[in-house]
Image (tube, rainbow over the protein chains, first blue to last red):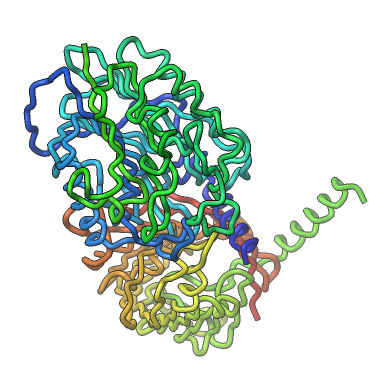
Length: 356
Length: 276
C-alpha cells in the first residue's frame, strides 16, 4: 500500500509539469523574510535592559496527540482548537512580557491549523508590535497523511521595528529521496536587525530533528557562523534539536514511542559536543554550569503531555551581558503563574540582557 | 529488430489506419448530441457509453466503478435542423440539440481510499468518511456550424451525505469533482467545441467553470468563506484509426481558487476508445 502511495505521488508529480515547482515548496538561498505589524501599535520606548524569550509553539497544537509524534492519530485542528491554544500561548507571552520573542513552528497558512495566521494573531493579542517570518515548511499541497497545504516556520516578534530581515536557506537532508525532499521541511536561519539606536542583530533557527547524514551538525555550524559574523551585539535563539554538553541522559527517552525511523529523534550520543563551541563563545540564558549541575531543571521538551520535560533542546545565545539569575526555563506555573505543559511540546525560556 | 525499424513499422501501421478512417463517425460528445442508437463505445481510461435510443445515452466507467461509482444519463429533448433531399429520400439534418444530462455518483469509496497514512493520503487516516450520494444535473445546448459542434452547458450539483466533519480535498481536479461534499450547491457552466481538425484528426476543447461556496465549518483563511471557482480546460486531439478505433492525447488544465490562493495545474491526458 505504501508503494502504491508512492506511485500516486510520483504520477502526480509527473502530471503537473507546468512549472518546475508546481506545489511551491522551494526557496532561494537567500530571500527577504515576510514582515508583519500588529493591528494596533503599542508604542514602547527602547530601554537598555532587554527581555528575550524563545518558544517552540508547536503550531498552536497544544497537547493534541498528532500522528507524527506517535502518541495519537490527529492531523487537522479546528479553528476553535487553534484559537483556544493561541489564547493560552498569548496569555503566557503577556505574563512573560518579552521585548523580543523568537518563535519556532508557528503556522501562517496551514490546513492543520485551520489557516489561522498565528504570527498575526499573536502580534494582535500580545504587547509585541512587529514581526518577521521565514517559512521552513511550505507547500500548496502535501499529498501525504492528509496534511494538505502547509506554511510553517520561524518568526521573530519585537516591540520595536525590525529591518533587513532575510531568510537564509540551510542545507537539506541528503538521506531522503528526491520526491520526499521536495515536500519535506526546508530549514532556515532568519536574520533581522532591531531598528533602534543600539545596533542589535537577531538570529533565529530551528535545526533538523531527524537526520542521519550530519545535516543537523552543519545547520548548527551555520547558525553559529551567523552569530560570529554579526557586526555588533547579537542574540541567537531557537530550537536546535540537540542536547547541551554534559547531559546525563542522551538516549532512550520514555516519550519516544515512534517505531517509524523517519520520526525517531531519540539518540543524541553522537552529538554530545555539537554545542560546545557556541557555549564557549557566547553567554546563554541558562549557563552551562547551572545546567550541568541539574539537567532536569532546564529540560524544555517532551512529546508526552502527561509526563514531564525530559530533554533540553531550546537555547538563547548572545554576546550581550546576561543579567545574572534571569535565565528561566518555564516548566510549570511556578514562574509565570501559568502552566506551560498544556500549551506546547516545548517549554519557553526567558532571559534579560543588559545592553551597553 | 532495431528500434528505428520498429518505430517505422508502427508509424506505417498508424498511417494506414488513419488513411482508412471516416469523418462521419458519431463519437461521444461533451455537448448535447447523443450517441446513435445501439452504438457502444468503450474507453480504456475514460467512460464506456451506450446509445440506448437515438436520443438516450448512458455512460459509466467500469474500472472507475470500484473507486468512484458513477453513472451518467444524457437525454436529447429536441433537435432542430432542416430537410435535405438525398438519393430521392428526404432526410432530416439536425443543426441544434437541446439535451439534459444527469449524473449520479457515490464518492464514499474514493474518500475511503484517500484517507490513509503516508504517501498518497489526501485525507487524514482518522477521517470519518460519510456515506454520500451526489447528483449533477446539466442542461446542454449544441449547434452544428459547418461540421463543428459548439455547445453550452449549465447546471448544478449537490450531495446527500451522513453526518461527518469531512475535510476538504484541495487537490487539483479532485477539488471540483468532490465540491458538492463541502458546499450545499455547486454551479456549473461550460462550453465546448469539437470537430474535424485535419483528415482523421479530431479536436475537442472543453472549458468548464465550477462555482461553489464551502460550508462555514470548512476552514478558510480570513473571517468569511468566499465563493470559489475551479475552471478546467481540456484540449484533446484524437486520431480515428479505422471506423472503430480512436486514440486521444490531450492536456487538461485547472485554474482554481484554493485556501492558499489561486493556482494553475496541468496534466496530460491519454485515451483509447473502440466503438461497436
